[in-house]
Amino acid sequence: MRNIFYDLKHGTEVLNYGRDRIADSVVQYAVKTGKKQINILDIGAGKGYDLINCSRLLAERGVDSSLYAIEGYEPNLKTLREKAITVESADIENGSFQYQDKLFDIVIMNQCLEHTKEVFHIFAEISRILKPNGICITGVPNLASLHNRLLLLAGRQPSSIRMYGPHVRGITKKDFIDFAEKGGYFKCIDFFGSNFYPFPPKLSNSLSRCLPSLSVSIFFVLKRTGKNGIFSDILDDVFFETPYKK
Image (cartoon, rainbow, N blue to C red; front, side, top):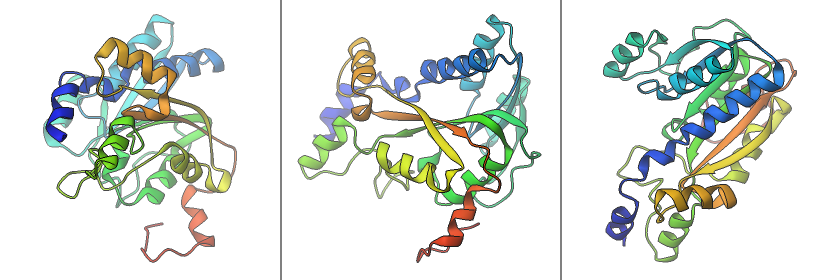
């Protein structure tokens, strides 16, 4: 069955990144706030596709953008610098982000969070460096996608999280929103999906807009509230057997 799904999805994987929808959210933020200069950080930026895409669309609307990236893969660092993006090479799970408090209007984290364990620390840093009313756009593989549900129904492992694979977290819409809104540091203000296995691109785009909770990838737009402190402060009131980094 896994081979059948692979054959059906082959060639549509680029849609998993939802790049157009992310750029739309960034432009909507600029229009709504009326800002003419925006600082954007991409965590796990890869080759900078999201940053360049957002910057291009903002420029078309007369908005200047300063682009920053956190990336740990050496070949990508060179590519990002060639694109005039200010880059930090960092382990996002085990260190502070080297940026001042309340620097960024927008933080993007696309197809990165599912690779990490220290989610409280990561969102603590995001809550620190985001301006009040700034937004964090997070995209992740959807554990509850249609194709993953069908795989589970057949007694097979969901493709978004496997023992022999890079992902260590399985994420669904409700669970992520419950997590992100804990403590009142963030508010989810928008949700959308992208790609829809096993359908071709045109139909996939339509289905993901109509049924985002069943899409291959899901995206959350989180607004930083005015609450003081950082996200990991919520760990003061809960005990986990896993000693999460604060």
